[in-house]
Amino acid sequence: MSTFTPRSTTLMLRSVPESKFTKYGKFAKSISHDSSIDLFARSPISKAIKAPHFNLIEYPSNHVYLTLDSMKNAGLRPRSYNTVIVCLDIRQDDRRGAIDKYTNLLRVATQIARERIALIYSDDSYSITDVSVGAKLSKTDPFQIEKEVLRLVYRNDPWAYNRELNSLEFKYKRVILESKPIFGGVCLTDRCNLRCDFCSKESQGKLQRRPLDDYKNLSEMFIGTVCTWQMDMFGEATEHPDFIEAVEWVDGKINESASISINTNGNLLTKDIVEVVRVSKFARVNVSLNSPDERTYELIMKGGSYNKVLNGVRSLVKARDDSKANSFKVSLSMILTEDTLGESEDFITLGENLGVDEVIIRALHLYPISVFDDIKQRYLEQIASTKDLVETVRKIEKRKSKSKIKVLFSPENVIWTNNLSRQVMFNNKTLLDMAGELPVEFDQPLKCSLPWSSFVNPTNDNRFSVCCFVLPFGLLTGDAPEYNFDDLWNGDMYQKLRRDIGGESSPHPCRAQVCRAIS
Image (tube, rainbow, N blue to C red; front, side, top):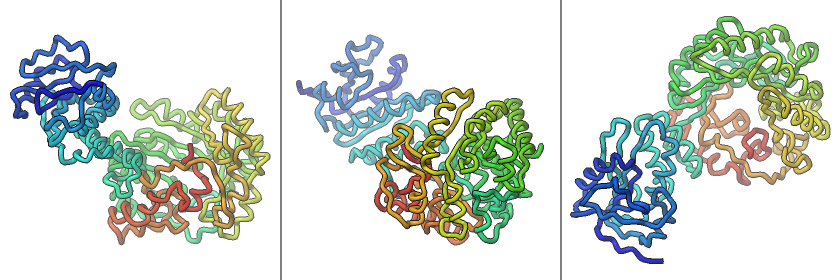
């Protein structure tokens, strides 16, 4: 491989259209102390580039832009230039596509530059700005390079920058975060108007509604950064007398590009509630119906009205179809128990007939809040046997392939889909392991991002956590009135989760893999 000899102490790397190069080139020359600047261009060098103060150099590569590989092919040695100027043309309509390209250029720059890296860039208005980032990128830290690209690409959109930075911090498993939560929610009420057979409400002691002002005060800490706000937690949110006002407040607080989601039993879907859903930033309304059969429904969903729920679903579907400003999804969900195991295919048919967007089917599992209470045996009696669940999975997968709507089925809550005999996920042994009574073995990596992305208050006691599974196992982040947001978000418990998740020190519910955070 040949070795390239620089003609200048300054190199310019570009990702700008040739039609704008003259403008960029003049600006680059103004910040350089050299009489000329080396400029790499792929072969053949474009005749459109007319800059006499540049040393135009061809490099042998099929790449459109200079990369680490093409740098080596060109014989360009590390630290061969004092200054590297990187030109970026950042357009709002191509932010996603630009990130990889810009990251590659900065990686090359950190390899080549000895002293300084200067970024010159323009946005849609084509005003050019110079930013020196040499000190930040001198150690060629991949995280810092990608972060700098995000900062530039999303410099006019702090909310989007936080979203992308959060994903980047998860990618590099940072323990202390600069980004704020992108998923959140505060418990409005942990009361419910039904008494479902598989629910643990009766074991939770005194249940109460949170005053709306308290709800606002807790939410105010972090609602501005979330991408999704969950209106419900461990209760039926529509049961709260101030539910509509709470939704209107949330709708006004979240970013214009953020969304609201809710799970509801559907018994209180009044005309006013359906209307506030229609005009607010709802992305999804999921109705927990749990059975396609009226008799079974009213047997397991005590206090509920099957026909009232169906009418509520029809109202939501109509509101969805009539809504021009907000196109939200309506879904039906079903929990598989001994009573409903044979109804899954009919449940999908019901969803199709009602015109919902999706049907969600899950296996019954123990929430940790009820693992140690006196109703554990009742739970275990309702959990379908492994053999029956395997057969049900086969039927659902077959019916799913023929469905007119999307069927969201999480076989990892039961078994692995790619090999039905490989690993049973949801049997009594795994459930008991949630209580720490038995060890569990698993052969799939846990890829849970919630310790980086989620900040929720599942119950009405001011405790925050990453999800409703981890909370009762002692991984609490403190009481909101006593700690500020940063003390919670980057506190000891969140840091511990970010270090431990997916490893041998993972909390028991994470080791048992009861959620969907598995790939």
